[in-house]
Structures are given as C-alpha cells and as structure tokens.
Amino acid sequence: MSGHDEVVIPRLAEGAVANDIGLLLAKLRAAGSEFNNKALAEFGLRERSYSVLRLACSGLEPTQRELADFLALDPSQIVALVDDLEGRGLVSREQGRTDRRQKIVLATPEGERLHATAETAMRECEAEQFSALAPDELTSLRTLLRKALWG
Image (cartoon, rainbow, N blue to C red; front, side, top):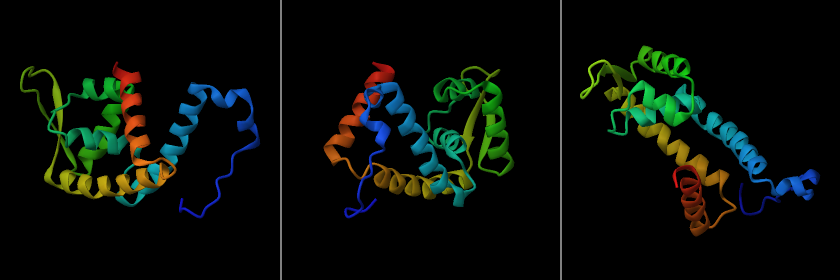
C-alpha cells in the first residue's frame, strides 16, 4: 500500500467485535497468509513450506517433531511438507546428532539459495503488509507477539 492509497475500514469494524483480540489476530493471520503465499508463489513455496525451509536453514537442526510443535501442525503435515521439499532437493533428513532415532531436517545448498531469495521477497511482503506502522510500532508488535506466545 503506498502513502496515497486510502484505507477503507469495513462497516462491521465499527462494532465492538472489532476490539476482540482473537478476531483481530485471526483476520491479520488470514490476510498475512494470502500476502505471503502470493509472494512465495514464484519460488514454488507456500507459507508452511517456507517456514519449514526457513527453520531448516536456521542452523538449529530441528527435528520433525520440533517442527510440528513449533509450527502447530500435525506431524503428518510436517512429513508431507518435508517430503515435498526433499523431493525438490531443498532439504535432507539426517540422523539426529544427540538422538540417532530422531531425524533432523537440514537445508541443502540449493535450499539455502532458494531460501535467501524467498526471504528477501518475504521481507518486502512484510514491509508492504505493515506499511501503516511506524518502525517503532513494528518493533513493539514483534515484541508483544513474542511475549504473548512465549512469555
């Protein structure tokens, strides 16, 4: 949204329900997913697959279980996402370093390259989505969301 675009507030946003944090977060989440998926389409990724790839590139060596827990997805969904990324040569499953029964998910060099490009697109998407917020407001939003999630 550029500075000269007019913000249109829906008529229903005038009601008390528009102050419900759960509703606001759900609406923001839905709009964010739409923005993110459009930005990621050119990379053959969607929000969930990008999240798995991003975590595989983090250096944290996440296990499939950790990915499922962190992303609040069913383990079978993680398996399908990792299968797809692995089939594209973007990630690999390796034996866990501390527990050999666990599989960690690591990015391949191709996955690292794709992630770097997709991450740039995601940063641009985020800047557009939150263009109405000043930089200090965006920092506060991140801080508050992290605090609400993890204390």
